[in-house]
Structure formats: structure tokens, C-alpha cells
Image 1: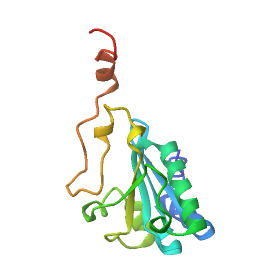
Image 2: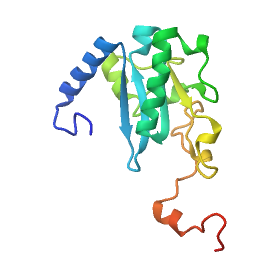
Image 3: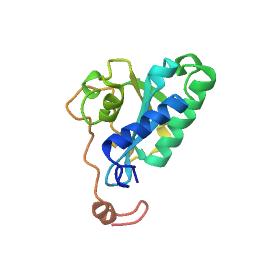
Image 4: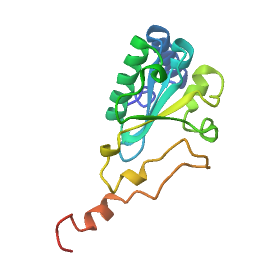
Length: 170
């Protein structure tokens, strides 16, 4: 649960996040979709470490948080990922300017008092083998322009259950 869901006011949530940034130099925000996936992104890397913020989408939130936290540990210890290179298989792509305003990074803008600019947010893409072949093409990429980055609609659980299992006759 998030602080606001636990009854904190919006102002109290902003204050708690600001405190985390002041103490650690950064914080991680998680936004959950109905299916348990969502997106995570950092606030504070740009200001305190001179590194673009990081985001990851379309993964379970705990996995996304672990990936980003691991990358941030490397940034804090060794400097920008461009100089150290991301771990093998990971790809970092610049988020297209069309996606820097609006719902994707609204809390970042509210905490920082400005909007993200081109080059200030990188999307972390997991290695190719991280998704099964039916879900790999569904991963949204924020490095492409468009009103809403989306691939084909994800099948519902009911639709997935109706499909024949691999290796089984229909």
C-alpha cells in the first residue's frame, strides 16, 4: 500500500518523499496497475548524482524496484551508468519527450516543481529472455513518440485460460 492509501494526506506524502530524497539523495516511486504490474521511477538522481532518472515499466513492482535499486547502487558507488555500462543484457533508452509530462511522471514534476526535459529520464529494458515469447512484444517502450505507448492489448486471465497450453492439443 502507498502512504496515501494508508490515510496520509497528499501533502504528507510529498513531505515524506522529500525527506527520503534529502536523506538518501533519491527515492523510488511505484505506480501499480490493476494486474500487479506497473511502473517504478526514481526521483533525485538528476539533482544529487548528475544522472538521468530511471524508470521501468510492465514488470511486477517488486522486480522493477530491485532492478532499479541495484542500478542506483552502482550509480552511487561508481558514477553514471554511461561510464560504467548497464549490466549485461539490460538496455537504457531515453524516454521520448512526449511522455515526460502527464501521468507517467506526475509525482516527479510535483516534487521537483518542474517538468522533466529531454534526456532526463531513461527507461530500463530487461534482457530479451526476461519475458515469455507471448509477452515480449507487449512491453511498452517510452522511447517512441505517440499519445500513449502501448502494444497490443494484453489478454485477460479468462482469455489466457481459454487458450490451449503449449504442447497440448486444442
